[in-house]
Image 1 (cartoon, rainbow, N blue to C red):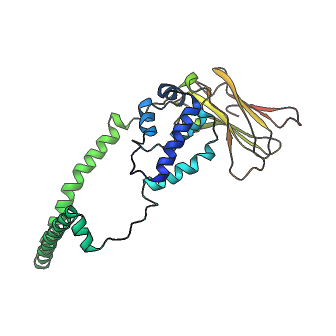
Image 2 (cartoon, rainbow, N blue to C red; image 1 turned 90 degrees about the vertical axis):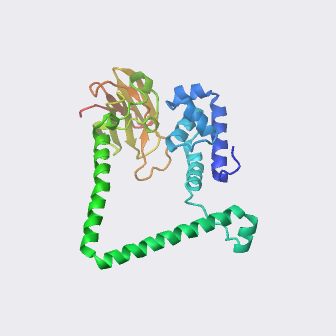
Image 3 (cartoon, rainbow, N blue to C red; image 1 turned 180 degrees about the vertical axis):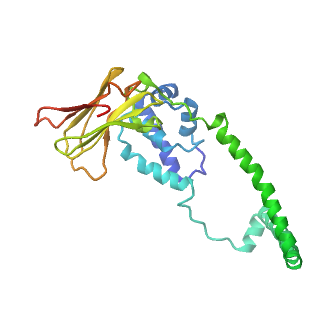
Length: 285
């Protein structure tokens, strides 16, 4: 890795390399498992490109490691990389800079010359405004119009052109099955069914039309309960709530199941091992 990288960034890349080794996957294997190209993984693991949050989450899932242990490291690295946590070093004496760094002295002279030209131009513009205020105002308005109109036309062409179409999903139907919906970029989910269980647990069935996959999610009220999502198109997916003390807004989500349509999606809620029985509902209810 380049020695000029921030320390937090270097530590994050080291962690990502360890997670890859733990997953025992090649770059091609990571591409198949995470739906992120192997060329992207090569850049992330060699510090050529800063890894996005969803890539770190996907790698944690592939290595079967709790992402909460890695994401704080990613946040520190992201802050350092974007220079939000950067602090300037003490200024060097003017004499030292000119002798130790002659190229910096040359740049300072060029910068001063540029500032002098700009200053003279501003003075000339100020004199023109004072002498002919109305003509100057009209000229400025015409100049602004000439600059803004082409930009507006280009912007409109981008919005209506082929590039305005939504990006294709990275998985669909069975290729989404078993994946975490938070890391698959299925960005158009809709709630197709919901229910509040007898003990107050909130349940929802979600569907991504572009990925043609569904999942269930819940806001836990206690630990030990289980939710399951089933569909005629795929194999059932389930998750068990392990939270000891649920907090407000906390949510658990099953992995994804192939679902071409909302019809047939069914969610079942199992309160706990000590409370037999289940509550089930279908999409549309």
